Amino acid sequence: MAEKRGKNTTKENIRAPIVTFMGHVDHGKTSILDAIRKTNVQEHEYGGITQHVGAYQVSHKDKNITFIDTPGHEAFTQMRSRGGKAADIVVLVVAADEGVKPQTKEAISHIKAASVPIVVAINKMDKTGADSNKVKQELAQESILVEDWGGEEVCVEVSAKNGEGLDDLLDAILTVAEVAQLTGSSEGELEATIIESKLDQQKGVSVSCVVRNGTLRVGDKVTGSGFFAKVKSIKDDKGKTLKEATPSMPIEILGFKETPHVGDLIVEKGSELTELSEDEDKIEIVGKDAKRTVSIILKADTEGCLEAVKASLAKLITSSVEATYALRFLHTGTGDISESDITLAQSVRGVVIGFNVKIPPAMRDLSESLGVITKTYKAIYELIEDVEKLLEGTAIEEESKIRGRAQVLKIFKLQSGDIIAGCKVLAGALKVKGRVAIYDKDPADLTEEDEPLHRAKIKSLKKGKDEIDIAGKDNECGILLKPQFKDIKVDMWIEAI
Image (cartoon, rainbow, N blue to C red; front, top):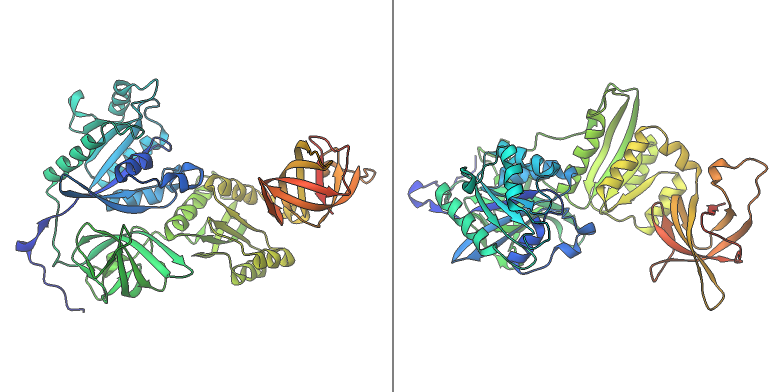
């Protein structure tokens, strides 16, 4: 048993509240936090949806508030649920012009399960059609009764766009925190909640966490999710190097060799709390008794995204009336797709799925040479849709036969005389210097008598203004053929041969 830092209740202090945002996608959770922090994170997020969890601390009236920024997409239910468990207070964000939506109701369920106080923020009060009374009525139908409707929940009307009501929101958070009398001892047993963890090629495994109790110091030996670490460095949310972190501080630490799981605790090595630091919600095989099993190697950029994608894919199986298909997570991890991922998939005729990670060119070539379906996604709904098709038993057989197929969406005739076909790749991939055939109907409907209208090589591919070497499925690109086909038209098909 490790020697404990003596817990002295006489030294417990009121600590900063740890606050998380929940609500429907696009209702302005990140925008509010951005406005508070006077920064702009949202424009860097794909599709405007926050897909990672970050923690930040701000000061208001000489008091600190720690914010956990949680994802907005419904597929990130599990991350959002863990965010609720990690927080002292939840700000429920509802757009004044849209009201209560499905994800709002989902968030309310998580909040109630976590038994934490709520502050309602009715956002977008600057927009035409904003109706806070309608929002309050809809919230009342979900058993969220705000103060001016005779309830107990604090409600603030805000506009992230023009800053209206943000100071009132911070005041409300501090008021609720004062009532809650949140305490944390810097000399107590270490407890830090993992907010995010990821594998960085330069730094190694970095873990974002918020200290709830005790003090975390450089050199400490800790454990999280069953993985041990000696803390090599600590940085605060602004990147400043620290020697130690005390209650409510959001930090990033280095020292783990494996990525611990989002929502788990970091505790001292040998602590009695060690069993609480391990995640029991691992999903490895879903639908074990099914007739058809699809093996998946799943990679994501962060542990939080990995967990969320796994939970979403599992839902495809568990929500099905008939357990016809099973998903086997052969390997899951963080980081870019590697040679071992592809060779492992090839050995079991599985597929490699990546979320927010890259396929290095050499790995793309390897997957093509081995016939392994390897795909990456930036939007989780696209990933889920493709895996759903895969479970229907059509994706592997059909796509493995298609080297590359695209449909012409628009024709651009340049002053130079060149003709650019604006296309969308519907299957496989098209490459520069690749041979293609042009058809006036879907190649899937071709008969033996059908001849292509034209044969050529792809001279160049463009995505926007950039030259690219390859265009994969679901990507739009501009194609310049050599020799050119002057009669090419919209709705024609380009097929790799």
